[in-house]
Image (tube, rainbow over all chains, first blue to last red; front, side, top):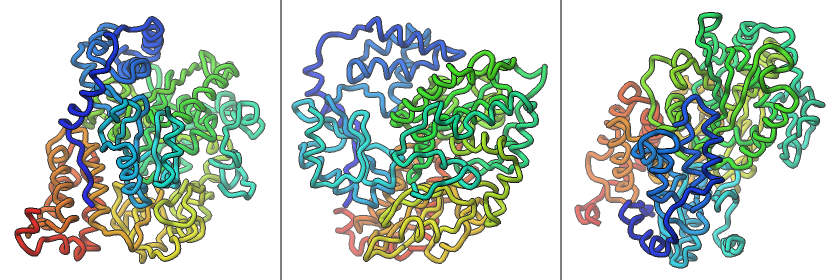
Amino acid sequence: MSEPVIKLADLHKQSAAAAASTPAPFVMYADDRAAIEHEMHHYEDPRAASIEALKIVQKRYGWVPDAAIAEIGGLLGIPASDVEGVATFYNLIFRRPVGRHVIKVCDSISCFLTGYDDVRSAFSAKLGIQLGQTTADGRFTLLPICCLGACDKGPVLMIDDDTHGNIAPDKIDQLLERYK
Amino acid sequence: MSAVRLSGDTHPLTYRIQPDLKPLDLKAYEALDGYAALRKTIKELQPGDVTKLVKDANLRGRGGAGFPAGVKWSLVPMGADAPKNKYLVCNADEMEPGTFKDRLLMESVPHQLVESMIIAAYAIQARRGYIFLRGEYIVAAQNLNRAIDEAKAAGYLGNKVCGGDWGFELFVHTGAGRYICGEETALINSLEGRRANPRAKPPFPQIAGLWGKPTVVNNVETLSNVAHIVLRGASWFQGLNQGKSKDAGTKLYGVSGRVKNPGCWELPMGTTAREILEVHGGGMKDGLKLKCWLPGGASTDFLLPEHLDLAMDFDTIARAQSRMGTGLLTVVDDKQNIVSVVRNLEDFFARESCGWCTPCRDGLPWTHKLLQALERGAGQTGDLEALEQMTRFLGPGKTFCAHAPGAMEPLQSALRFFRGEFEAGIAKSPSQVAA
């Protein structure tokens, strides 16, 4: 019954495969730079755009490479260490490569009561990975996430930006087919 | 939502929600009294009048703590000597496990929040506001941004709100995860682009908040009530509870867990938990019995079936040694082992601790470990006493913010009500411990 605890070491190990296929060094696209600069003007202090800047880079690359940390720091006028502190604090910022699609399975109380364990096991069996890991073909990363605020539809999960409710463990094949 | 046509007089927060849950655009919203409250505010009311109305209405914070919103606003420095930059922030980081009400309001009536925020900002004379929205609420972000653009184009936002001499800008700020962002001062740090560690209080945000400036932080549901209070008056708001409670207004209540009809409904404040569960939620699924329930999120103490007839309001639930919290029930059925349920809750709290102070950072993983052992029948003599010690060491006053004390609420009540189930997890022989 006990749940697998995700260890940092596992995350390192599993990302090695994905990292090996990482293309080209990081470059900040002009569009992304402009988007970040636009965002900075919404605040009294440019630092406030740090999370949005990380999200803009992640949208482009799927994750946030090392070189992006320094680049964002320069753009916002804050130390790279501060940007890294922020990047490692928030769970929706990925500092390692992830799959093309990220599956986030809610493991909070209402989903736990309505069948989270079975849903998680079904994904693990189907994809051959545990929470915190990425499939060998780089298609899916499986992560836990806390309450998604759709508890009346438990069990709930997100794949990329889409929220799916009332997940039946025997129907996940059809669901995954929509994410190539 | 119910198929019955709701009215603004009885269901102010939800009567404009369409059966398909799609948001009304500006025109359709205006056709249902939308922005009438804002026009009235700018034309007829002084900032202090708005605060007084909200105070008289006895609008208490719907984020869980129940602090009177008007009192919060009245602590903000006003007048010529007040700092020029002041901020209004909407806490839309809905992440309390078991809570799904703010999502509904933002996805389905975004203009209501935008209008109410403009009025609230006028009351404290803020020039800028932010909606701190959790990153996972993609549709809410789209709908709110569209509503803000429409409001801007119509002159409800900008340098001259409704043609007057006061200006207000509103932005949606999306987060990147972490439950602790819902804590008022951690939210402010996050909004400033820092790690979401809570700040010491005092100073309170009303005096020194975002970038050190006076800042009011209110929950989505709290703010959404403001336009209605301005339009219909404080005594109308007081009467919405139909005499069921000392607290005013309606409340978004709900239920999740293994019930027939899980959902969220706007009901008079003080509606009983039994009505929420049995009438609106349809009762437990066939073959299941109610074992216990959380009144309003993971950080509230469990209550028992015998407590179902209590009015769901702040004071009544507090007298039963729990908290109303967010007001959305999570029900636990008789097929669940309470140790597993509490282990799940503490797993959440341990993972979401920001790590800032020691009792929380170290105590929560330890608590989780003890519960994991008890869950697999490998607990040791003294584990229950250790857990009880945690409820004191991580309780109110021992930590920087309310995260760890919140985590202790379901644990302490579960130990009180279901001690036998925890004792059953203690190993009968040393070999079981090793396993």
